[in-house]
Length: 407
Image (tube, rainbow, N blue to C red; front, side):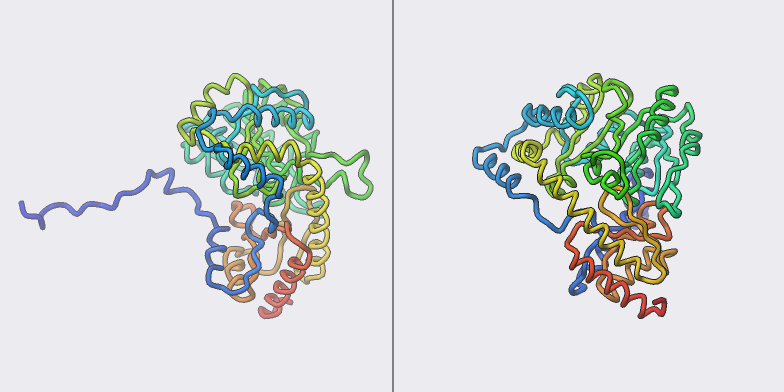
């Protein structure tokens, strides 16, 4: 047989579940901005400020001391102890036996899913939602169904009865992100109580992404009752530590540590041996010097975080006022997170709209469709920056709409 008679080999491909994953439309818009001069980027979920000096100094000191070796799969003891104290102060008694340190919050979400779901399992997620949460169970072969928030005069709201109806006995896991990316919606204590009771009855795991829990403004609004809470309502306030509740958190938002890739999990102690195995086979451990920076964040960072929340609330309010002057924009001030998720002319095709804004006026926001079909018709603007930068962005938005004849 000659070489010309041999069958032509097909190109190798990833498995079907991976090929079916949605690519990030946020990245797609950001990529469209490469090479465009003077882009104002509001598309990613991070502040334009660097990590505080006391955290960077702790990492530098750890590096200088040679903290470059492997650590325990579940994290160094000082960080697990610091996190246990931090969680206990916010949400009730929690021991280090319920804490695992991870290489970023998104790694924590993957580990949590790997712990409890597999091929064919049914997962329910509240959307619109950061796409990573919806896609992670799909990597594992699970089937994801969604329950959508609705938008109206009071902003984004949950239909609790619709969610409870979707949580059928054959459901393996519920995914809830509150405060929510992208909408800023916050699940109320009463909603959490009802969901927890329902999931207890049916043996459904709750995986709560609470990365934005400190970025919470509702109690600080005019007319709010009681003292301002340092955290949004959490399932940890209601659930025993050894029931089917896994809470995921991160150092990225409350301490401006997005690039450090450090997170943690609060979970039943009975899961920790198996979780340690998963960490070993995923990343082995988080870097020692990064974990020591995390200790500094927890032990020294409370005043910084409280000031950050005040700054973010001021930026939120400033941007809401500015966008409210733009004809065709419908925007409400959300109670949490660091985003405005609002409608505007042309947002029914949000990906094309956001690419055009980058190209035409150098304004970078995230398309609503990046957060699932329920997000179409909206765009997401991260307001974690100074107000002068926000004002410049609003002026570009006005210019873009004027060029299109919609303003």
